[in-house]
Image 1 (cartoon, rainbow, N blue to C red):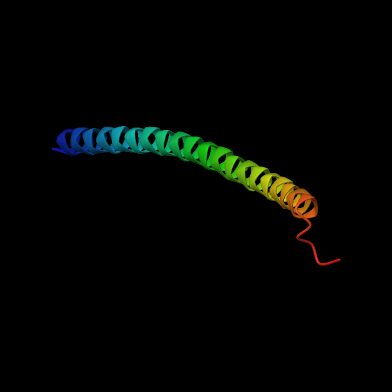
Image 2: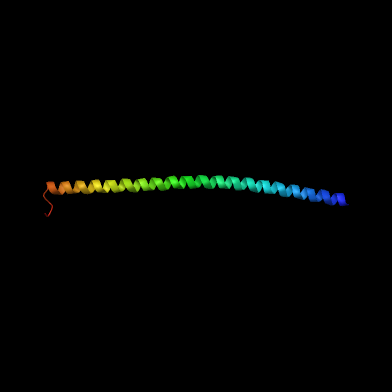
Length: 78
């Protein structure tokens, strides 16, 4: 009788170990996916920052060009 209980206990412990190993594997996969998502998000943020910089430079160029056109057409009030 005692041997049956021991075998049953060992069987349950093995099942628990298997489930823990699966949970660790899942956790590792989730961490890897989160790292990948974080890296892609960082790249997206850098891309957006670059776009903002490009837009600011274009706005400056357009403002300067508008000033030159106004001067040529004598539209400035100076």
